[in-house]
Length: 106
Length: 120
Image (cartoon, rainbow over all chains, first blue to last red; front, side):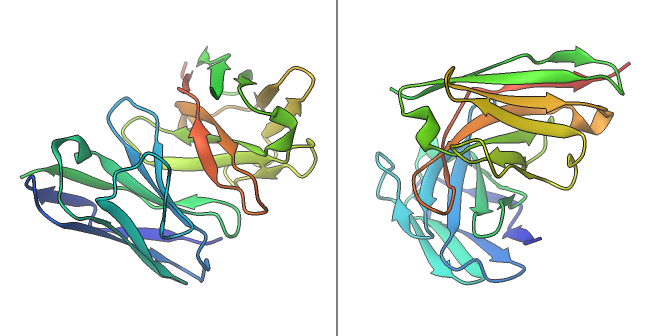
C-alpha cells in the first residue's frame, strides 16, 4: 500500500501569507495526486488534481506542483476563507489520503 | 446539478449490520465509478471501498475487507455499502463520492455524509 505523509500537521499563518504544504508518498504515484480542502462540519472539496491542475471554480491563489513521491500545495496569499484542513490523496494505486494539515490563524 | 444523498446511517451495536445507500442524480450514473470514504470523529479521511461504473471490480481497504460489501443498482442510480460485523472503530461519517471520467478514479464530488455509530 502507498502511504502518504503530509507536513506540517498544523500551520499557523496570517492573512496575506504565502503557505506551502508538503505531501510525500512512500512510492511513486506519478502525477496521480489530488488536494482537498475541508472546513469543520463540511464536505471535502477538490482543489487540485493530477498534481497541478486547478479544479474549476477554485481561486488561482491555489497551486500544486510535484511528481513521483514529493508534492506541494501552495496558497500564494492566504485569505480568511482558506483557514481549513487540507488533505493530499494519491489515486495511482487504490486511494490513500495524507493525515491532513490544519491551517489556523496565527 | 450533481447530487449525492446518503441514507441508512445510525446507531448499531458491535457485531451488528447496517446498509448505507447513496442516491445519485445529475449525471450518467452507470458511466462513473463510485466510492465510499469515511472520517472518524476528529480524524482524517480514510478510503473504504470503490466500484466501477458497471458494478464489477469492487475494491476494499484492508480494514473492511471481508466485512463490507459495495454494490450498485444502475437502474435506480443508487450505490450501497453493506456493513457487517461492525466494530467501534467503524464509527465515522461515511461519504459517498463520485469518480470522474478516466482510468484513474479521482473523487470529484462528495455527498454530505451520513453518521454511523457503533456502540453498545
